Image 1 (cartoon, one colour):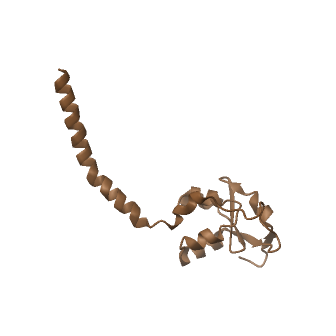
Image 2 (cartoon, helix red, strand yellow):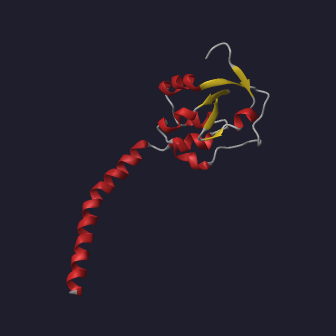
Image 3 (tube, helix red, strand yellow):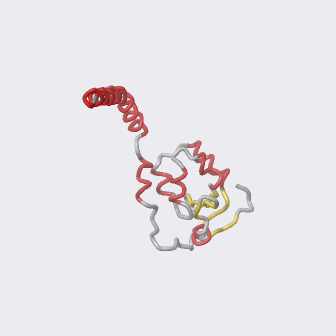
Length: 137
């Protein structure tokens, strides 16, 4: 972040709202995260849902650590004019990003359960297949 940073309005950032041109606002700073979409640990859909918008609250609520905050420097493009306001007023990021606060252990527990259940389901399916095959012959 050099001394030659640019000042953007919320409206200027809002046009950068797709997978080939994705900017977000975090704590009154604009970031071009287009090249980070495929690397984002939460998936590109999280960033795309925030594209062209202020994602400060979501970023803070997701519990990003110091490493994520340092990475922001790489994508910094400028400051947000504090007198500009988002269009439309009170724009919110869709509720579909609510999984940002999801506990990662939940995925591991459900995956583990499915892996234990899979052999049982395979044997059950095989048993039904044999039963109906022998019954029809």
